Image (cartoon, rainbow, N blue to C red; front, side):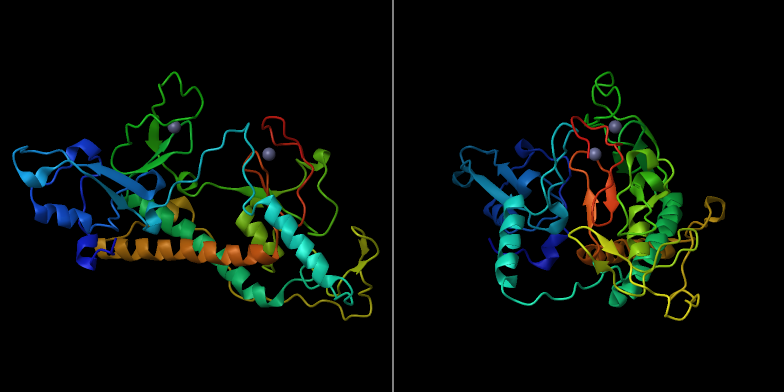
Length: 355
Ligand SMILES: [Zn+2]
Ligand SMILES: [Zn+2]
């Protein structure tokens, strides 16, 4: 099907329109519907919505029943990620077979060639070119949080008391999709309360590593090591200096003495490190009591646009950082670990899984 003209894209149908409610009365209507290939207001699994026409006047020839499929290839209509229970293992982002194949290829290519020095960050140093990006990601996250706090003053957002579902609108939705505590008693209905910024931007914490190449965190250390938002930890490891969370910055590459063993290079002949000011000023979160709501519609729209921009920038930047600084996620629960290998704290709680 051809793409819809831009003037058609803003045409919205009632969101709850079922397949049986839609019918067309004339050929013109049929053609109009047929060209709505990128209709963004339709959301349906697999990006397809099947519309079954219901003839209104059976005597007219044009109303032969027929099915038409509207494709929703618009990115905002992509499926939500599948829900995995704690008993199921999440799939690898890249299938394990492909990882193995790529590793074999790499091994074949490197055979017979002199060993190259290990590049940062594997050698213990930070990737210098990524430091400004790490500062940007850090600041975009703060901007996002501050803007969300301001927007929540003027936009009603509901959060379920028992699960992660949120609903942006004056009243919570009636769909029975709750999987939270004792959902069966409520017949799957959500119990709505007003949302806070943590409901909209669910915090994902991870352990702070003083030395990202250091020993893996043991189970008995699980309460003594600070935890902080995973994005912040990623930025710290990528070069952002946060005084509250110091981290080891090597100035010489490590010396490997085995496959997983290494020693630090002697840095004694280097001049003493001079504390440098941060590369870029670090933003801070505005306390809840000092949040000022946008004054008028214009300011609200501008704030909303800035918020979306900050979200996109943060995601894009974090993705780039993650290509160099590996981040591990548990296959069964949402636990995230920023570092080359996962931790050994047995705090999973998910079925049959312990790291
Ligand atoms: Zn719920
Ligand atoms: Zn887990």
